Image 1: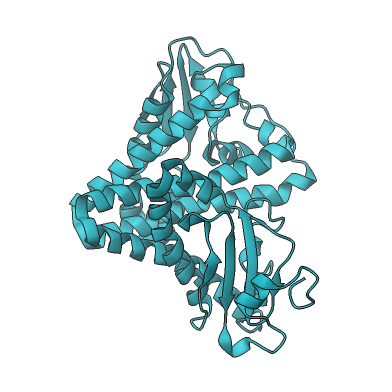
Image 2: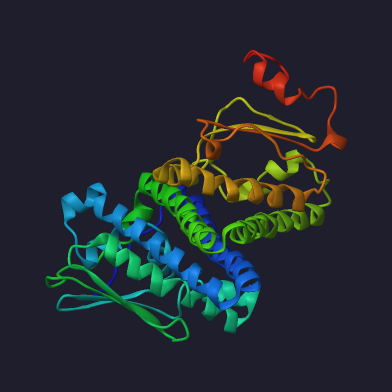
Length: 373
């Protein structure tokens, strides 16, 4: 059984690059939580990391069971893989490293190694990389199977194994391979999978956060803040090094450029902003109207948003202040506090000029104001 091969349209290439970046964010999220949890709570903390991953899997499996495709194509191993909600199998198919076989009711996916292993090994070393993945893959997929239901069971190899695989078994014989290539052939589907892959970072963070706080209370909250700050800082420091290597100053305009943060999403298709913006050397004023992470946090109501804000505030401090330590991180509204729009009003005071409105002036200015077009 082979995965159908489809050419990637030129317009889909930037979205494929974004998809790789946002999938790698999952491994970075795992890395920062693994580090922080192991340092603060030891093996007892790693047990809660795994418990949170399992609950994230239940959330994801339930959502995949409930998605419209399940009511059209049915539910089974091939359908679960074809409509998987993150990018691991899609990227493996694009790279030619994914092998799909079927025997009776079981669909087997095989890759050269567990997804995330190479990324994490570069940051943690291979021993800690497989330890982190042991707290990720098995509990996550156990939760996915529970949430998806429909008689589907998932068995997964230990992350130390090469090649690595998982076996998905359903009640009926698997008749057709999953059509993974169809995502790149459909630009709209590419936007959808980019958004969902990104949004599910919030599921990982939210349920791991809940497990840590339920067990370690205020100490667990502090662990989450440390992990969230590191998630931002690991990315912000890379942007800082890149901007400095280009011989450019550490301004907000350079941070917001495609040499900076927008390299990940140049078309602003994943995080959507209003056209009215003010970005200068000293000011970073944008209104985010769609955030895929906030969409996931909101599924757990006020508690989900509270857990999301615990991450959101520390993550943005790490992201911006590791780029330029003088950045003042401020919102005048933010989705993770229950608002409809995230109004970023971040500034570097030393770079502000008389042409920069204050956050309040920008919020209250008419749309035609020349300082906030």
